Length: 108
Image 1: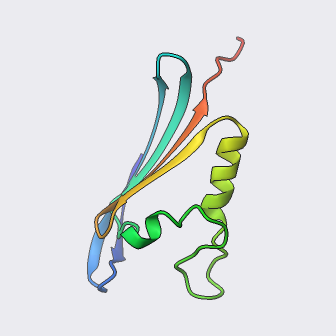
Image 2 (image 1 turned 45 degrees about the horizontal axis):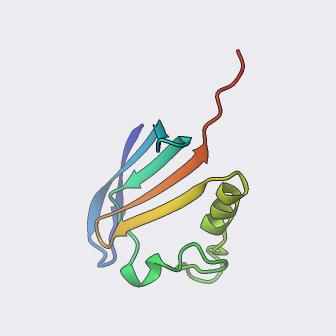
């Protein structure tokens, strides 16, 4: 699904953001994966923060605006179920979060 919203970037300039959510099934030859990707054309994640975003209590928000546990919890849940969470970004342009979980066909 696509959604477009107005926002401000790091410099305060107004920008149009696009949010895209994609689901698909992938195979790596050994395993099948259910894949969910969330992509947005917002301000992205700063390069210096990219390696830290999955660490507990890391946040770029001001005090009282968040705990910095959201991506940590998502990462922990992905690992618990045999999957992984990948985060990629270009500062000032976009961010992409991809969740991969083992795909299991249900019984009909």
